[in-house]
Length: 455
Image (cartoon, rainbow, N blue to C red; front, top):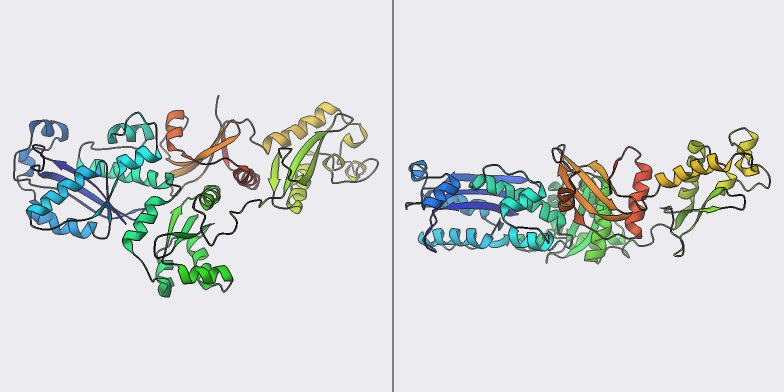
């Protein structure tokens, strides 16, 4: 749990500043669960430059509560939370100073969104909250007011959590919460989980990730882990302390994140990184008569497959579908093993490429269409899929045929702005696994929105 906050002060000498406004959003990593926003009477003068910057003046604060009147609420909303702020050392120092004046020791673990941004979003022109949020397409209202800046920090932190593929932020949060020995209360864990699509992380009592999975219904899948009697489930039931999750909305994003983060975190209960899950590939070659032939063959390192399949049966099923849709010759697709014309030609469902009757140009054009629609080699494109809520979409970026990463954007953002698009993307590794995941998902989801980008 996090307490994301922003504080406006009077300005002045070091450790003599007073709080004029405070906004705190309690955030569970997915949504705001509580909030506290208040002006505060600092009982001291406000520096003129601060009045000009924030618009807060002494007259506005005359009837505002003093700090001792809001202190209890601040303690309650930040208890068992990690404090997150943009330049956290400043906000945390101010809070500690105010509590020290009351004779109360205030101690919390902190995270600085400036430092996290520098680590997870390198090479930005500026890391000030205003310029950073503008570059990332994050809307900010009431700049230099506590509520506006705190809400902007919530949105920024949500993006940073998504970019933290090593899950160091979440691991630290689990340690702070110390949800140990919960294995006897597995029902309590399940009740806190959503029935949404996403990736889930099973942690032990030390916060270590012991298993990563993805599901279209996270709660249902965790329930299966907690009730099944197979070897892996029994180990999970013994070791689990808590479960964290990331909603993705898109199954494709969940599949890509699961693959990437299993490799990055190497959980002890995941099988061998799910490598070589696919064994068959679609390949093309030109025969002696000049026709482009297609074939399903075992994956080999010497040739680049057009697309890949988990097994041969899936590949053959795909080819039969392409034969039907694009009126291809079964013989030139390795399906019909006859010596003369194919069976489809005999029933007038083939134009005769198998006996050199159909022209090379017209037949090869149809085969080329199949190849182009099932590969993204040399393409610049984004795939737009479901988001985590109704006002959001997910985006998968491919540049020059190379998978670059994933991100999320609000519907009012213009992702055709390449600078904003690049800043939204969480970089991820391009490999054979990601290629297979993307291509197979595109095959199964023909309604997936694909936007080709101009070079």
